Image (cartoon, rainbow, N blue to C red):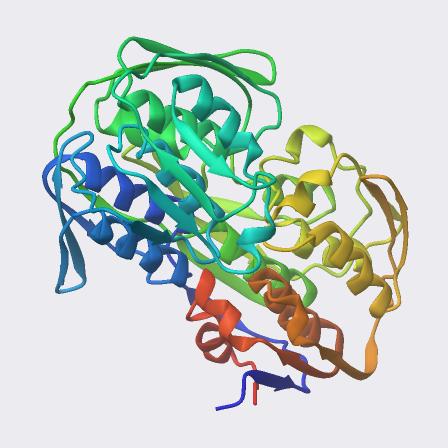
Length: 441
């Protein structure tokens, strides 16, 4: 079977209700927390993507059994530090930075050395951000140039730390929080505001964690060595997956969509705030709180006139995975859109800021970059008519999604390679597009 798709036709005049894939961040966290709970946890609507399946394989290698019965995953945990780790254990995180960084936090008491590896993309990503605090806890880590492969050996003499996290990385913050679970005393993290799924999940589990919000920062206090019981959890829809259908609808003619039961955690909906500043009228309806997370149906209508945005940097962390598709809207907006301090985009599965600029220039959009700031010169009349090919070397699922949405909204004849990349986060992406009416060969 070929690993590419062909799109030749734009999409318009649709009015649909859809569900998108389950939240990847929460899916991974639910698996990891279940592995540390006492008893058998039941997780429904778990995202069955490569990153999450690698999370299940990882806990299995660490001695945690799981099964799937009627769509529900049952995971039997033995409490904190309940792993049964064999000698010469090798864990493969695949493409998942979330899994790789968070599992290190659960290995801080391992009595035998564990080797962590990943795919080519993950092996290029910097792990110094988590190596530094883990060593402060007393953990022994071996790594060349702070890259994978990495070897970790835990200690029985963990010490609580006080750590300043200035990047705004939820993965770094979560790694420290998970390390603190197995550490006596109180660990304090002063963190730049970022996604808070880990903190909300622990509150749902009634774990003694305290979050004190400050201006742009949070002080997080975690008391270690407190066991928690097994749980039942239904994973909500993923805003990152929903974002592509939000933009597809905005940029298509005479179209409406309702995306049902999506996680609209305030630390994740920067894309909605930014697009509404540009003239979109995206609405959240049927809001409810579910185990600490806010869930809603997202209502979107196509918009003819979109305006440029001077994006407030305070929204960066809540839209970091969605800037690729936000830039596509900026390309069709009237005026010059300005985005600042986006260096974190280059710390993802690929150097996304660099690739975004190449992509925009490919479709004829002027972009000016000064270090990690970019200005996008929008063209409301932009219509594509020539042939485009997106090559395999990109190897980034969100670049694949972006290419599809561009083809379906701006036109042209597109050959988009690396179809298998969708398995990282949204295996049903193409099926959902076809359900709306997209013609994909």
